[in-house]
Length: 135
Image (cartoon, rainbow, N blue to C red):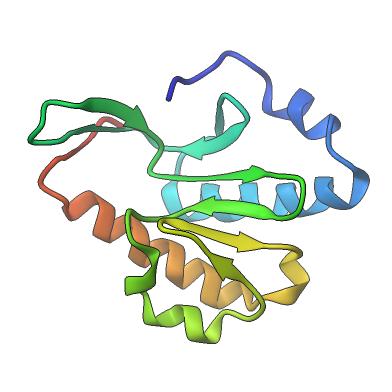
């Protein structure tokens, strides 16, 4: 994944009005929890910068916390294995993938639980031995 030079504000303007308010809320959460400004990694809004290198030699870069506006839901990229987080039971209406959390509307979830979940996920990611925090 690569950081782009695209403007976050221009990207927000491309979203439907109801999504614009929600993306601004997610950006505020990301800034608060990471103390970083958001940047676009393609169509993904990311905070912080990590480098990973697996034992196999495969390596790359990714944000510490990131999310994307997809057709049917917000996709939050939180972990390599999201099922490990017990807080999901208290989040509200959502679905999960291997490392992703899917939320249709932020009104469907408890924002305080989401913030706690993001904090925990960031700590877990930073503790992996194959992760190096760049910024």
